[in-house]
Length: 181
Image (cartoon, rainbow, N blue to C red; front, side, top):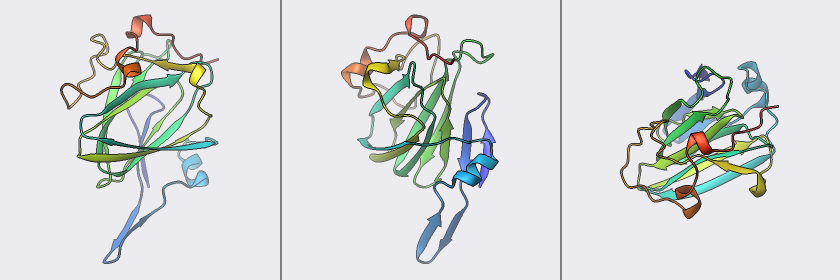
């Protein structure tokens, strides 16, 4: 597998080794030892699976006090996956980076604690899987509005379909940021 750190320190794009032949393909979606060798030494405790249609935008989410590292992938369809650095002491605080994840490229993204995370669906249907290093606590949920002009995310869709919750997240300068202690 090929692991590349993004310009946002701690965020990794992972390109698993894919074995293809006339029967289809095989790839290892996770191997704790192999990921630890690349600096992703995380104990995952929860797996999540979502399905959405074109134009759906989910994000930008994080947990405030009980952070979650995430390992995300897209087994069907294509998404534009985005992370925003919320670490106050980081030289890239408030900056974002986007990645195309799809069933075709089979890439994964490691999103560490301290980042808001979200994605929009750019195929007819997309299925989204992610491993989490902590359990989900609804009372600990934080969020950042998807279109904060100071962050300036360039989404590849116009007029996304959002949940009521995602429509009402605050701007970065009003958000309760993750507790990284």
